[in-house]
Length: 105
Image (cartoon, rainbow, N blue to C red):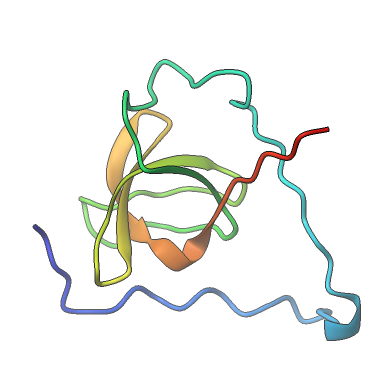
């Protein structure tokens, strides 16, 4: 099991015009709500959405943009997750994503 010497990077700071009193809730639409894409793993732990952009530092990591859908296949104890995004498998910091919730109408 790969372990990193470093903890995952902290999330980026909020925008300069961020106002705590009017914290905006961003709703992401899940383009795969009706079915997973062909590149999705057959089994996965959780489907998440990226809440920040992340650029890989090492070859075994993922690069993704805010709003990207990632299928988690493994959660490491050190805070790094392994997942699949757009057919590419790699590691990424778990604090850069949040779970996708589906609400019944």
